[in-house]
Amino acid sequence: MSNISSIVVFSLSGFSATVNYRVTLFSLTLLCYCLIVVVNVSLILTIILDQNLHEPMYMFLCSLCINGLYGTAGFYPKFVSDLLSDTHVISYAGCLLQVFVIYSNAKTDYSILVLMAYDRYVAICRPLEYHSVMSVRRTAVLLSLSWLLPLCIEASVIGLTSTLKLCGSHIQKLYCENWSIVKLACGSTKVNDIVGLIIITFYLFHALFIGCSYVWLVKSALKSREGRKKFTQTCVPHLLCLLNVTAALLFDTMYSRYGSASMPQTLRNFMAIQFLIIPPFLNPIIYGLILTKIRNRMIHLCKMAGQRFKLTLKV
Image (cartoon, rainbow, N blue to C red; front, side):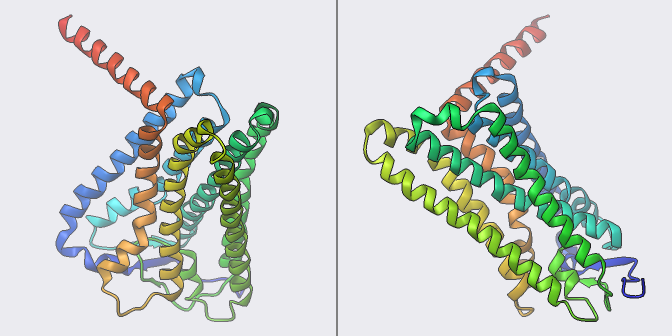
């Protein structure tokens, strides 16, 4: 057990740039988190309560929103409390748990987006086979894998990191991140580096798969007016969410591994947390606004809630 780290707590240095604006940042962060919860829960409830939305595409979207709530729960509560605190520390076990939640969330996000791309490919390129290919059983299996695989991958990463002997406890971010912990190791981290590259390559193949599926989608959609309409209605929001998540994760990966210490701390903080702010907030809004079924259902539910509220006031 001599090779295992004796570090008890980590200090988070990213908060040094927030001291003069802590109340303002606390208010904005709390508002942002509340909005993320509201928009995601609203979409989840809309899909669950409406039998007409119990289709693979909407089930994948529901899972995407649940994952958004899961990931932000690993960041916002701790971040909000740290903004008003004078000491910014996190326990060793708490740090590894935060890494697991935040980065398994990011991997699950991408896995679900791959499933959504496959679903759209089958719907547009093989419409007659759609219900047999995307059966209830297969949809359930694919959804389970989109969660289990990222969770297992991240668990293996955390397992490797936990065996490292660390020579420091200073993390230059607003939250715990695996590469920041690995950089504190006293000895060799070759195994961690190799596993990290394998995982990055694995998710690059995800991106390649999505790219290939969209090449076929565009070719198929251009053949008919109905195909173009279906592509615009269901694939555009997926593309927007995909670009949103990809850009956010690319920023975080590049910053973690190659970021310069000469960059202003405020800019470094933004680059580090934007994938925890933008995708969870924008994804449900993009889908809620563009997908007609969801938009109409949400408008209907809002009208019903308004009518019930008026009746309550009259009583």
